Amino acid sequence: MSQRHTRLAGLGSSLGRAARRVRAMIAECDYAQRRATTLMTAPDRFLIDRDKAPQTYSEFLFRTSSGLLHEPSARRRARGQLIG
Image (cartoon, rainbow, N blue to C red; front, top):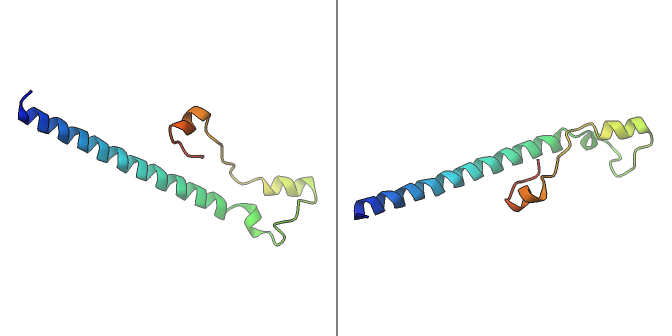
């Protein structure tokens, strides 16, 4: 392999690493934005007595009406996937 081909291969791998880092950063920002939105619009945020258990079943349903986060499988967690 010539020296030119070696430089091009190194440049390609560097660009690939940079692209993966940018993609990971965008995915993390997306996760943070979705999580912040979920927390800010949760019904529990607007309750006066948040620490008290719901008194009725309908109050329980109201409190759990916000978007629920789903935990990824063990295989996806091992690859670094975030909850969401």
